[in-house]
Amino acid sequence: MKIKEEALRKWAENDLTMTQLPQGGYDALFSYRATTCRNGGTEFDSALRITLHPENGDWRIDNVAVEIDPNDPGWKQTCIHESSANPNPATLAKHSQARGMLVNDFLERDWPTDNAGCYCTSIHLTHKLILAVSTVRYWLNNHTK
Image 1 (spheres, helix red, strand yellow):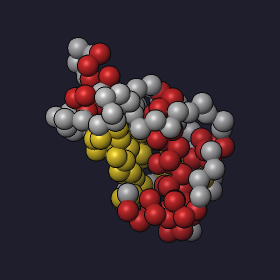
Image 2 (tube, helix red, strand yellow; image 1 turned 90 degrees about the vertical axis):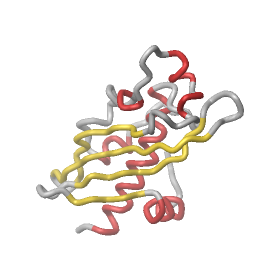
Image 3 (cartoon, helix red, strand yellow; image 1 turned 30 degrees about the vertical axis):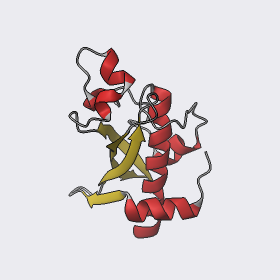
């Protein structure tokens, strides 16, 4: 997925918080305004948290997580929330294939994606992770060396 540099710069400035970890890695928090996939696309705030560490000139993704306020009215209108007896946003990235991958390998892979604003399936999550990881890589390339 090709993302324009202008978009990456804007997201890095406005939607990304990078915190350096003691062992040289980073904790990245990418804010994302999600929407439900039904009922007119009700918006809700979300964030993707990615922890990574340097490895052989690249960055290894240690963990990914989705953070959503479980009391957000928009989240409560998602099909995930309504179809689950115990809807927990913390479990959305539990099986993400990004975990353990090098950033460049993750971004060079041809992932199936869906650019809808929701988190209904792993394909939807992967789309958001590509946006977030691309923004993180842009920031790292411009702030570390």
